[in-house]
Length: 197
Image (tube, rainbow, N blue to C red):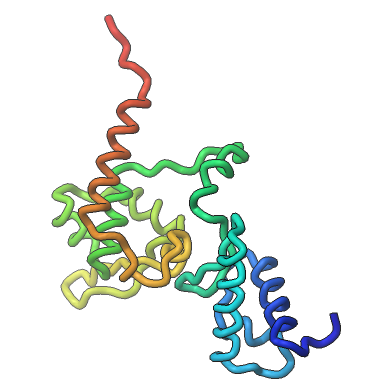
């Protein structure tokens, strides 16, 4: 292809870039694809038209907007099939890790002390390290109190990994609690039987 000339040509370039990228691409990043700046509004309209094209085609892949930009991903209804291709199991996080993540996501920014007050138990350093190593939470500042404790908040990566544009799209807290109870019940059912004497 020479230079893009029609809106369809521009959409194909954007589509190729989104397919090739391993991370979401922002509108400003997509604007750099072209020698002539099309402007943010034009690029947004093209991406939205591309999203509509994929949706209308009813394919197993969809174009979605996350906190960091746009990306192609498989539709949720096909994930169970794709999981069969994976050799490794996804990481399982303890209830302490998930509760800590939920507190940070819904109450951010929070200190370790805030998390401990809400959970009613001490937070292991390993719990916060797990969330930081996953790049789901980060220190965003320090509270102006004695000791200047670190303030934790979620990251764009957290939103991207959950397929969210913003924190306002998080499910209601009661739904999170219900899901965590279901996970606990599943883990108890799948646990090996206790040895008998």
